Every structure is written in C-alpha cells, then in structure tokens.
Amino acid sequence: LFFEDYCQLFSKLYNLETVCLRYFNVFGPGQLGNSPYSTAVSSWIQRISEKQPLRSDGDGTQSRDLVYVEDVCQANFLAAVSDKKMFGEVYNVGTGKSYSNNQILRILEEKSGRYQIINAPSRKGDVKHTCADISKIRKELGFNLETKFEDGLIKTLEWWNIP
Image (cartoon, rainbow, N blue to C red):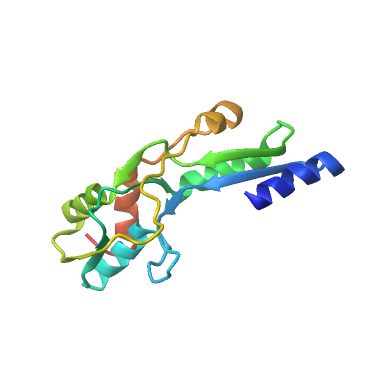
C-alpha cells in the first residue's frame, strides 16, 4: 500500500505514468516450495516430489485465490501495452475464485496419489480467506483468465515430473 501511495503521489507531482498490480497467490512451474514465502501449493508439490509429508495448518477451511503464472504474465503484458494513461492505477491480479486448503489437498491427492498430511495449529495472524475482485482489470485492460486452477496444477505437477 505504501508503494501504491508513492506511485499515485509521483503521478500527481511529476505527471509520471504508474501502474500497480496486486498479485494474489501465484503458482506454476519453476516455483520451488522451500522458502518461507512459498505458496502452500508450491510447498506441497515440492514435498510430494520428495515423498515427504505435507503440513496443513488449522482446519483447512482457509481459502486462497490462486492464479497461474502465465495469467500473471498476461496481466503484466496488458498493463505494459495499454493505451490507457495510468496515473497510479491499481489492479488485482487473480482469478476471482478461491479454493480452500482442503479442496487443494483433495485435488492434489486425486492428481498425484496418496500422501501423508501432518496437521499443525493455525498460524498466528494468517488471513482466513482471499479472493481477488478482478472486474476492474477485466474491464479496463481486457484481462481474461486462460488457465483454470486444476489445469495449472497439472502443468505444475508435470514440471515436477509427478504423474
């Protein structure tokens, strides 16, 4: 938010075109899951590839808007080539749909086979639900999702060589 405010300020003060893209939970091939900043999806897939148990925090009902990396690239491209003059514009980049951790784990099991889940307590301060409102980026930049969550998940599993 701080940087968005700065972009809007510089746009007003110096007539500088700026645009801010708020990425929701981006996932896809090439994303490793061994960082504290990794998404749950990348962490779980890496653990599956290593035949390690998956950690699930809380009751699994928390949900996330998960957007495939190629759709994020499309959003960046549309913002870069737009004829629209942007002076501090802010756009959400997501899918407008959320999946619970329990749903994601069920899909992963369906696509990759059985694995062990270790339940952990909810993480302090964790946001319970996220879902992007993408109506503005659709209307103003022509953003259209091209990859359904499950299709992106399959592409990501293939990148990890997980059948």
